[in-house]
Image 1 (cartoon, rainbow, N blue to C red):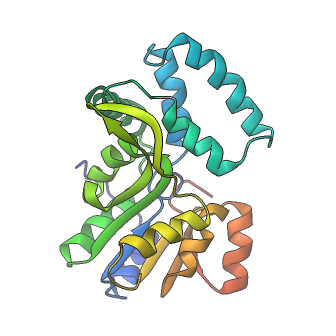
Image 2: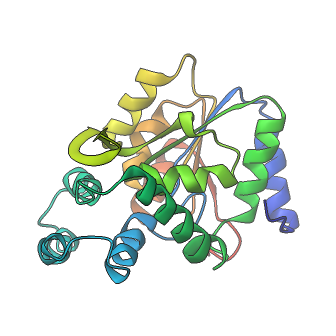
Amino acid sequence: MKVTSITSAAQQFVDSVLALRPQIAVFDCDGTLWSGDVGADFFYWEIERGLLPAKVVEWALPRYEDYKRGNVGEEVMCGEMVTINAGISERRLEEAAAEFFSSQVEQRDRIFPEMMQLTHALKNSGCELWAVSSTNSWVIREGAKRFGIPSENVLAACVHAENELATDRLVRVPSGPAKATALNEFLRGKVDACFGNSIHDAAMLELARNAFAVNPNPDLESIALAKGWRIYWPGGTK
């Protein structure tokens, strides 16, 4: 783990969360633990490196543009960003995810250092950590390692595998209310602290005793203000 110093304001935020002594803490990933949308970034990165078949790319690029124009639903698009990898070996996808996260996120300083410090401090205190994301599980599991979140506690968009190959059969796509549904299915206790950045995290933030809007989009910021949730801006985000 790369050790990065944080500001006094960031340290105060970390300390304030630790003071709550949470036993279960849940984190969204894109925009909350690191900046940007790694699901979209990985999609374009795969295309640049020729990992996806040409026929898939020919369909997927205009499909994603349709999504950005609002013509494809969020959950549908997040699922398709995973199923386009059907036929590729899971090992190859895991190796690609490791290379991608290291080169495109970690080495580009996109990780929010106070969030990394927070998760490791929580883990050291005995807190159970979970990551929930609508981005593909290969990338999220790789990123979660940096934060001390075990792979078995990652609930991300994923597909069934057959003969060690990814298929087009979805297991889950945790987006919007589906994030809360996934947590209710897997958690054995109440969420003490939850952290998210977008409207798609609102349902799972509702589950928590202590909800934190981290680097929030305008829609989530409005909800957080109305509900009295804590709002925190990582260094450099505002």
